[in-house]
Length: 259
Image 1 (cartoon, rainbow, N blue to C red):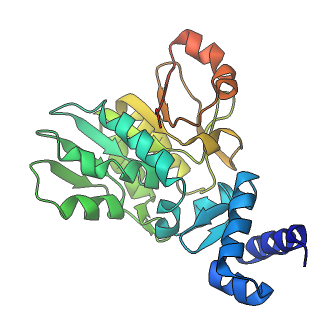
Image 2 (image 1 turned 135 degrees about the vertical axis):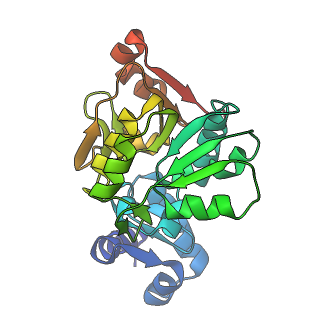
Image 3 (image 1 turned 90 degrees about the horizontal axis):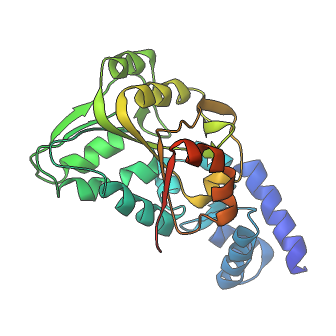
């Protein structure tokens, strides 16, 4: 079987089953696991898939519906760059709001460097990670019905609780970011929660790796405003920056990691 034909079959399997495993593909096509890993690397470079630990899923939109564990394996280098940037904006005594994206969750290890933080989140995973290390921060978990794949509270009760808040800073992940369509998500339940978080903060930071600027999501959460701050990675290109030029001229700030 030619390589291109194998790639087409792999892509079809991912579209049908949402994910594939290296071992299963190796056995199916009767090639080595290294060959399959090489196939997946090539397909990822073409933007066809996103590799995970031991396999692959479709990029962006499929990732939004994948498990929390799977999503933590995507774009790990880029997420590290972004969380280092985000930590530089936190100050002692801040009250911060963290949404349940896997990019935002990477902030947790940095939080223990600060004094007298108040951390509010709708993420069971983030709350769990914070509780694993003794610290002097105050942790508030916003409750409600939990969306099990993400482990985030996303119900009407969640939104009501967030609407009563006004914090110093909110750190929010995005499935997609566009100067015209704004911040987007593919999870209907998530959209009003993110929107409430945006309104509940004095400063809003959107955390998104460079892959999030090339597609549009099912749902627009909110427009990107001139007073918002976008944090991304070193893969953010001048062409991507140029698309935001009208907003940059009005005050929008974009910071990219340095690799």
